[in-house]
Image (cartoon, rainbow, N blue to C red; front, side):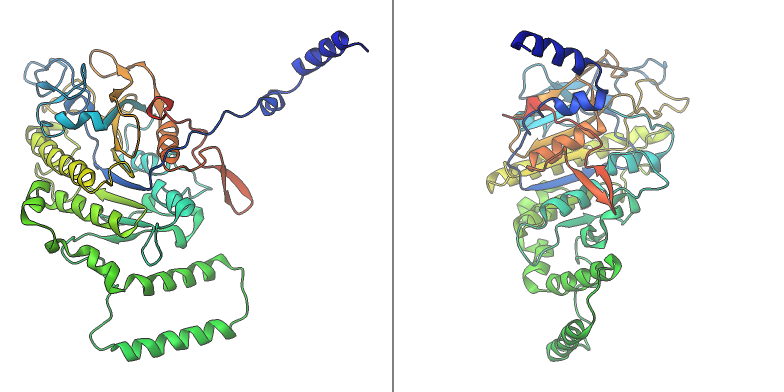
Length: 425
């Protein structure tokens, strides 16, 4: 067979291969890899309205039932990119920020299911307990230094934030009060250091004499005990001493939510890999970001709270040369439609909403993707939730094409997501 006949026969044969075999024969695209080392993930529970924050459109009127933004917009440091007037501290910093305006999923009517989607990257599955983004990153990158947890949750614990099939070793340390740190890390008053040392010696002896086991429940429990002993050290617990910060810096961050963001910066300095900061406690408007009916009337208070805290976090990280190493992520379970409900508020919208990235060494552009004139439909550059997660993984140098394993079952780490390539390089 001459060369021409060989090539002709080979190409005809390839046409009859199954699709999966043809795909396997195509060389994989080079992995996109960033250089970030930490993530501060800010969670806006309830559903931040993109049209009233990072994707403003024409002004609407709830009284006249005219669809549109609730507030006026203002220009930013990036030409052609505007934000809500109540984001006036973030506006001049938008060259360090990208509002991804075209995130989408199909969950709109149930907050819990949408919260799960935005924490695990997947729909609820009755047979698989998927790990959260924080636990996945903890699993892949661990803490930057020994003696600190890889994953801290500043907010109430929830299964959607958990490790799923990865196990307890990749779970979170949580606290709800920034003034005192996590409960359970300090020894009771009656346990002197000498008594604690005897207890640890006894535990060490039991470990040496116990038979070897591969039971993940026992090994995970043992790992958690070991980590908890390390976390009780004065070096780590000092992270929660916010009173060590200058008063004017603390004031620039704002109230309770701002103090959470300040604590997140201190945890980054201690080597924590992933910190989630919740903004769904002590709501200023009484209803939080779920602005049905009258809740929208004080929504500007929430937006202002977010504005001051995130602007302070960006500038503070930058002043400490940590912004390029720290990816700030702002997410919510879905967005809000441009129309107003009967009470003047807004419903839910999952088909197009905004999530925000800042810092992390990305090539920021103010805004990525485009929606229509009412921020209701995606016009250009759609970004699925797996795509958004893959972007976060890529920024940390994590292989977003790999599989995790639930026992012997392979589970794609981002459900097939592809990073936003324009933000790298």
